[in-house]
Image (cartoon, rainbow, N blue to C red; front, side, top):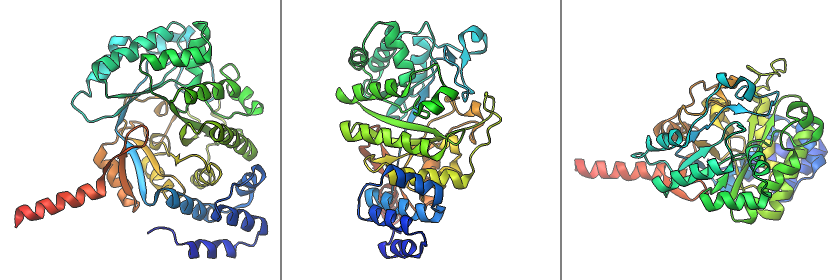
Length: 393
């Protein structure tokens, strides 16, 4: 059932805080909320208040549609020259005996495992290995595209790219064009963490800063690539740091319109240097997604990465502004399971993901990486039922 504007206005009018009412009516009038208003939502608005508004915005943009794609991950290495305090995944180069390092043939063999399956995307991201350079990854992409030309290659965070380009003595613009020419088609959103230096210097001081992250995504947008954006929330940041992060992304999106989706990522405290920091509650998670949908007005999609949240909590986000559940994935991704995520073996079949979406009273839409709609599973099931009924007759 799509959100009823009368019910939404009734919820807003019942709110005693006049400032929150004013924010809500701006949202209902399709007006942009300000930085201070974003902070106020975090500090003073209830979950039901922001959730109702976020669901309204989500349904205004996408109705009951919920998107996913058929994808798989390749993680070339977990060996990394950087030492982010929240990371449970990487191993420093000095301790590389604890890690892994895939060759081009190893990665191509992973791709070949899916030769008879209707996957549409391979997602390549991993640690920053000092010996795996931009030419190695360009040749990897070329090998994948030569084997399966129609497979969309999404890969590499600005953390990886900045290091590759710097070692190759390429400018960001030269490096992005070099990888695009090799077959790279889009960028994931990782490595953003929290942009503000007050937090960034405490949790990931030695890797690319906010300016460098944004420069790489801007360069990608300028040569026709679409990208995603993330934010790591629920650790030592304050609410205004979250809003600053979202505002920074919103401004770049105003300029380039190159982002597809925003993905809040829940901090997990297992097996890392921040294990003393408590994780956010489910209520706080839902507030984060809802406020993201309200603030990121120029981002088409808000995604819940189900391997990190767990499938049931990810399902719950569909009532709090989220319209994308990522993909079927499989158990090749270790980045979050090693951090103590809900899904220790993150694998979900298409049928399972479709049912999860349908249980939330949403319409499952299989998409490609760029959000072209491929299959409406509600329509498909109706067509199959009609065919089955006709066969009986």
